Image (cartoon, rainbow, N blue to C red; front, side):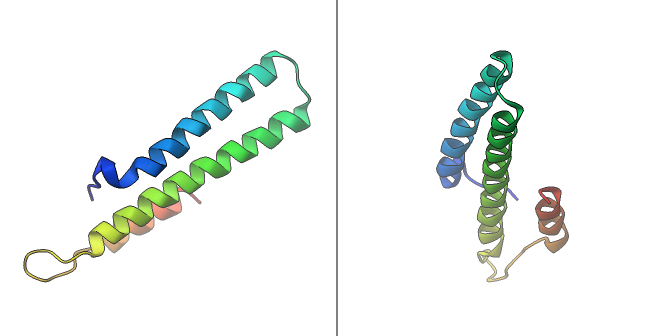
Length: 88
């Protein structure tokens, strides 16, 4: 399954925001911020990463479900399931 980068521009934007969140979390730890605040931000970053992963899988699934030149739909169900469960 290969997805065009243009189909995932919103995922790249989401990941850039997560990148900023992670930098902020590192600064929080270095500044000695409260554990509760750090964990809250870690949880938010983890959810954002999960959403990015699910978006990639959903885009790939749509891509796999499109018809090929012979009019067949080719989707590797086992591969899609493996990818989906890797985020669980």
